[in-house]
Image (tube, rainbow, N blue to C red; front, side):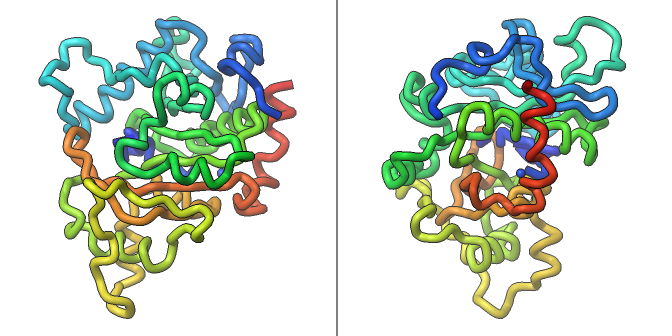
Length: 296
């Protein structure tokens, strides 16, 4: 699984918009703000305490709220973590009005895995579910970014938090010259048939073009197109889409071929692909000035 509002990427249900080496902390001062709305500020985690606190937020959402199962049955740490955390940048939303040190003011997070960092980790997180390697091979001149492990605490699941996160993401992709954003988005539960209307709507109306298409790995591929064309209740299908997926579609994202069941997180996952140049113009206009404003 990968996000959530409360959808897992192992993930946030949010409305989702030059080669540089190293992490963002090598490019910018650790205090650089990438987004700000009211008391909410967005930047990259700058130390181990902030990363650990983000993992605690993820645990509260994915495990305590949504019922994910810790691998090996060991949840003693109270943190959601894996081997990718060490090579990712962790985008954090802080509420500056809260008391205490910064790492206790984190109310939302997004995990960002760039292509060169994925190479260090032996691949992208989502490659266990989808044939991302084949997509990358078809676009050797593009720089890929995987969005994942995103979540927001319940009391902060608002338009303001979403927009603050996207200010940060937009700044980040511009600073790093990202050409394509990818990732997984999830439906709760492990039965695709329970989401037949929504999955079929995605399969019939939102599939990626051939040049951007990504198929679920053969051993895990589950059909999405479960309802015959013409039999979909579009209103019901749209209402059943998780906020994360609605948001990604709104900015111009497309959906891959097939869904995957993630038993650890108890979700049905679909693949999202967003070429930056194809993001809807109104969102480019809305966020386009943020990199200059926040990362100058």
